[in-house]
Image (cartoon, rainbow over the protein chains, first blue to last red):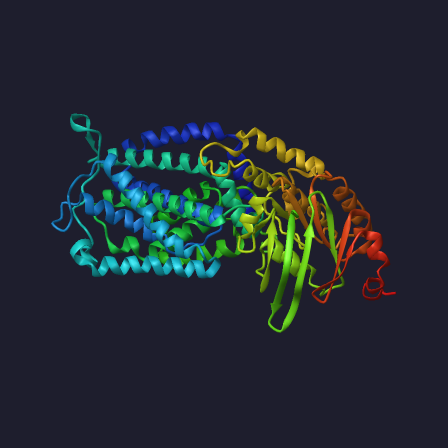
Length: 335
Length: 245
């Protein structure tokens, strides 16, 4: 294990020295990818990018603010259902529009508003109580989605969600092909990453780190910490909603699974494996966890068992995740 | 009108009367010390004034305004800065990042979410100036958990100073320090501007006599003496219970 960690540390140093070149390479690969990749691999990449947005949104809470939400699927699923209800051609839904200029603001505003409502209660607690309350709220939304079948389609979910459109009148474009949708998701991913980076490096972002490190002291300095936690919860919810929306536009179907606790659990695993509090870790974690079944299932059909073992190994031996290993940080006692 | 005033303050923990109708006033610019043996109620009094604990009865007022029902952060924003008896810092951040958190709040820029924190030059400069004041500038880029204990105590004070308080409340600033570190801390506190009103809770009497203009002695939750250091030192009851005469 030590040897592996040392090797990864070297990789990290290598990566850091060649940062600009790697960025250029990523940029070229990112643009050329849909023209060379198989459709299946392209779909998988779209999913990775969507889950990277989702994981980054949770990182704002868990990694930066120190709030362990186990109900983040609430906002992911809500984003999925809101856009489903607005855009789906199913008789249950409104079928109004799938224009991103309309749907993105609505989805992000609704998820942020619901996050404020949930946060108003949940953010009075912390630690394990917070974890349980966020789980409870998410499961509540899940059961609403199952029971209120006249609106949500019950356990079948909402089918018939078209691919989104962007623009006005004749100057609009619909992202029908897989390739075009990949570019759309890539653009949303890069925009979210950039915005979240701005947020975490701002005075507001440092306030969130202060809450994570020592909320009592921050209050003694004059901070009304509850307000900042509410703001973080709302921003996080809005980005999770955006991710949920992008996922169902791709699969054309919103399902109760988007709200289920396993979805919350999966994004948590992504964060812990990738490393919290860095945003980059969320992206790496989303990629590793989403691609893991693909890599493993060729040789071994019990990939979930292996994923569990991988998760345990990270918790025990690399609590700072892949990013921590790449930086050469490790828990000396554990290794 | 007194700057900071405590009227008939009582606090009971179950059957234990930690504070019993304590009244005192701190005047602007005064350096007021609260002393007493362990269990005298000093920390309870301190916590009720800062808002970390609620009183059973009585009230606290600041510049004539009753602040008994205000939250800790609201009292801090009125100008009551306080330190903690046990180091209560942002352990995972650097020394500079700690002070900058206090500084960015004072400059009311902590709501900014788009500009980087480094781009607020007045916040950066002020955080550096405060670190220089408490002698921590050479350590500015070190993570707090790596600092020596005495340096962490100095950072406690730096954080409170960075909020630009009108009254600085210090809870046993030399707690747990070696004699050498204590002397440095006494010097640091002594060099703070005279215009800054201070209330210092301490059980080390030597620390207090060189710093305070006025001393109040607490014993079993009650004030038994209050006055200039020399008067208090001569007080027979104080000598009996505190100086072990």
